Image: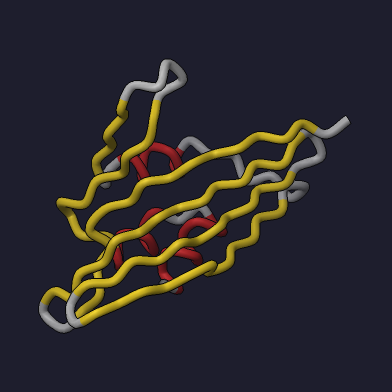
Length: 117
């Protein structure tokens, strides 16, 4: 889980790839409410073009973890706060223990934007 948080907080896809299975998918809804599915490589695309702004604060916390045997899921919250807005991501991560290593096998998420006045 630390690799996921380190990658998300520091915008470092290489950290995320350490825990992200190559076949894992990210799923959410487009603005028109249709399903959008991303491959793992989207992390690289997002973070290579991201601008690291010192005025943006990023935090992450685990809200819940459940596991049984080789399967687990986690609900996590990532908050990105800038002078202009606050963005809250709530991620639902599914894990499988593959070859004695926990790997994220898929993610669904919700995003909320709160403009600052």
